[in-house]
Image (cartoon, rainbow, N blue to C red; front, side, top):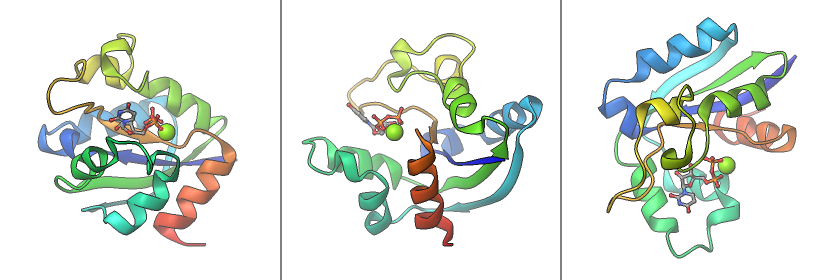
Length: 137
Ligand code: UDP
Ligand code: MG
């Protein structure tokens, strides 16, 4: 059984979209193994997004991710890593297909940058690394 890390980002919490995102997870048939609400910390975000730390816009990503409480958790189910990514849609919501979470609940970036509702691990390696980072062994 595969596991993946998911985050319902602060924009979605502020916009009261948590229930609609969780509804999609449950409707699809995935199991929520862990879930909590917390304001993400810079130290772990730097590790979480290690591949983006050197980008000029990294501080805007961390400001966004720490702009309020987020929901973070672990999903399990057959093929959940790719299926959850497919449910999320493209990183830039302006390019995300209708029917995906990003394509249904977010717009192309404005002066605040990309605000795209959800996170999901992108591979088995990322999932294992991210689950250990946020929830321990
Ligand atoms: N991000 C951004 N601008 C970019 C690339 C990424 O604001 O040009 C942010 C955005 O919140 C994105 C996150 O950094 O979801 C992680 O980027 P990644 O390329 O891993 O996209 P994802 O896996 O979330 O689709
Ligand atoms: Mg990613």
